[in-house]
Image (cartoon, rainbow, N blue to C red; front, side, top):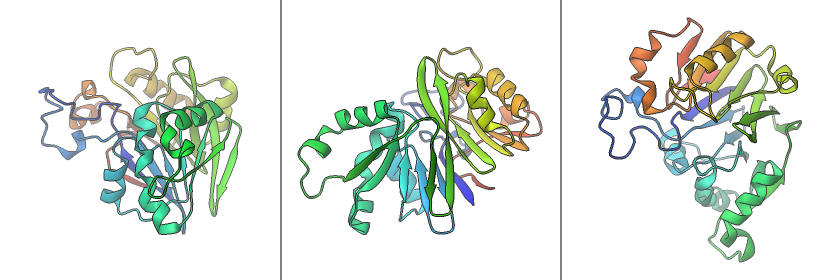
Length: 253
């Protein structure tokens, strides 16, 4: 089993349009970040987590030609607005794309992509929505995924655990009952926005404290703002078992 990190940036991505800071003008490819998303690969199946505005580019760059399903963490645009680009997968397989989300998120997808659901015509994306909750066990062939309830500020969203690896993005807090689901993970991918306190995301200090509380063999920081600083400089300040994630990173687990 392996996971490819497709994007590690915030809702604006990095570089940010019009910004001339040292990160946004960096020539280091590790400082160039598409919107946050990952894909879990089994022997025969691929399961995507989040389809943001860079979905098409991420699929082309990674060479993905089949998807079993898409799991949505929450309804913010940087996690769902790329769903229109599932059409090539529909055409290739002749079937709807299975999309799994919290009921609130599923309703928002129906509203935001009203043209798909209310007046389906040939050529439009075809989506089959499945409502899930924070206590779901999902199976896609050899891939087994446990949902995790996390808080994005005051908004309940989902994280996911697949075997020894957990993926949490846009987290600000995790209730004790949900934290129990994460115990024993060997590999953790978790958001760290930047250095300052933020109402809806872990900052670097909070993310590192969260990593320490779980004690994984290794953790990678994702959903990084340009305000975090240069990847090469931040990496020097991290504990030995923590790294800055980058677009295209592949982790075997």
